[in-house]
Image 1: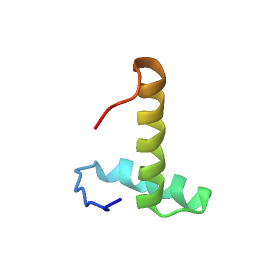
Image 2: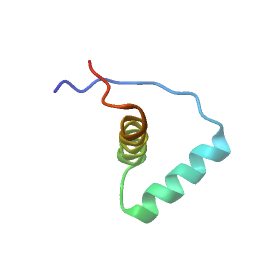
Image 3: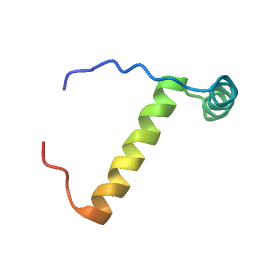
Length: 53
């Protein structure tokens, strides 16, 4: 699977909070975001069926 890059805009305060959460979990902010996105997609697929790509 290819790894792609995604740039996002985020409020500074929210970014600091993201770093606090990811540090607490022992992860980088990037890894934390990947987990959050994966969880979101899994929940969506549970409710609506598999997303076919």
